[in-house]
Length: 435
Image (cartoon, rainbow, N blue to C red; front, side, top):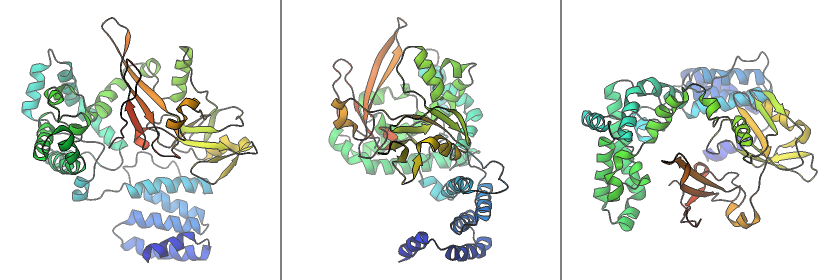
């Protein structure tokens, strides 16, 4: 009944109704323990009532109440228009969604940033092996420098703060990241591994707990790296883990002088120029918009477009815009809004406050791959390493595909699947998703 009433209310377009809702929110806000949530509801009601200046101020207050947001509102405008209010609402929604949930719920929820407890025995093992073991040297490098880089990583990850003292770190790591996650992972994967690899459930949970403490490693790596297999578990110390790479070791690499020029991987325009100068085929750049302004733009073709964040990854916020039959307007896959072709770049720029987007023509696969591509472009990712002779050598390849119709990217983070590729024959193996 309550859900039905809320749905009917949200469908209402009568300003008087929303003004009454806003008045009710004003009354509840001062006495509620969830002030940011009621500020957001107030702004939402005021926006529906057409009172944009008041709505923008309410959304701005939500952002002020949530200082751990990675991107804060710029200086509020003197007069709020519909697009600036929409942008403030989006930020306020993130602030409400990522508000702190309390200690117990915080332990239960899976986090993207962790601070593992490294025991003295593990540190001594790394120090003794560092002379001949490259992985041990990198583990030590992570340990020595993580206090310098992890705070920045936690600031970018809006949901959880970094535990500062030893007790908080031990509780979060041993209870939340190790014990609780091991139980959850065992429920999801335990029976399958028991049947497929003949590893008892009790053995699985014991190995997860032991490796999480001694390596240390996130429990999920027990299944991701197949540590339930004896040969993989024997060389578990040779693996580098996500909690070491992204927040610390990669950040240390980023401080190398001229790294952006040497390897412009985070800027899609710079990367395309680098690839083009080396004779590699890349999709042309039609336009770039950033923080509400048009950086570069040309005439858009009468064809489908693909829009993605300039420094994005994992297919997040990627959009396909279909060119309509008249050839003079576009419609997005996740919106009913129709945008004229001559105004598309300006329209996108108005919605890019706090972001940057690149516009490219929407590519399609060869017809022979149509049954695997569905509605997105499939890709083959080939990883190479420099061998002893100084030459690039392919070591592994995966073929990525969307798993459902309507998906605009094949990224596994967006629900896609990937199959291993046999380097000698090009044959695909069985595909899997991240689960």
